[in-house]
Length: 443
Image 1 (spheres, helix red, strand yellow):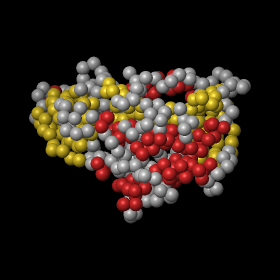
Image 2 (cartoon, rainbow, N blue to C red; image 1 turned 135 degrees about the vertical axis):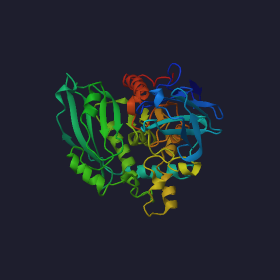
Image 3 (tube, rainbow, N blue to C red; image 1 turned 180 degrees about the vertical axis):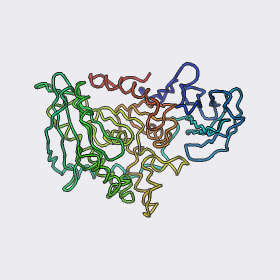
Image 4 (tube, rainbow, N blue to C red; image 1 turned 45 degrees about the vertical axis):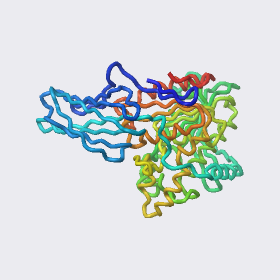
């Protein structure tokens, strides 16, 4: 099913299957399927969830289904009746948004079962919960101007790439770059060892957490012909033992995404986002870059940074972002669940109004109007970490062509291979972009 939007490449690419949707992750014999299989409908249209318990004899007489609009507002609980191990629930929303359903029941032998399902209604009509600040561009342009005055100051630590990465060998290095007089961005880079040849660039940003970077992230992509760069979100060494990162995560960097979230000049995310731009400065100056293709790529927090990359650097030529975080930070204003890192729920004694105001400057939905290049972005319909309504609001704010892929069965982590449709589609995009071709048209 495809819904046409206002731009030639713009569409919603929806996962389909013969008949009903592929099964949601099963829990001890309980499954759910969607009708329609895509999980995408017009407001007011009838959606159905078909539940099944195996063996049928284990099914209870009735079960309660919890329903929430946008994973937030509670709707009346629905009761389903089981017949031969099957039960169906018709449901709808009368306005644009996402519907989350969860069934918890106990079988006749006392086993507790849980299943979830999700739909989205009129996703192309979902808009950011709060308006973009009038001085949004002015703030970020001023920060970029200050960054431009800071020398790049690259520090390279040449390391040995795994011998198996490529038959022809790989050039590999760790690097750090100055973001300010006291702050740096750190990462790793690899490309095929071919004298004089230049390569398209793939910059990979990391999901949330504090951990080392794996050399395979860049060497594997370098073996495919990329100048591959992998950037940490933190001003930390990238190859320390696990205990080093665990101590920081439990101590001074606990809930780091919320540090300074009541002041746009003190937010932890300010250095993170400026570090994104600084890493791109490094790539554009690298002699192995082909000067043409510069793709930003990431999942969750990494998807956030990939989108911010395109907003802060017009040299980025495409974005591939899986279930991005930071979309619609002020979602509660529109009755929506908050996205990671849940700023408005983590004020930690700070002024809540100041946090809400600051969040507007770090909301990917507000960076989106600066993004004019092709974007592939995904959303999981049972993702409560980065809810689909917020991602839709961000996508609808993009200034360029985009393809929004809804994954009906997917939670945030993609359990039970439920991100498979994104992985397949992103490969199509990346293969085309690496070859110098345009972003693929949506199917």
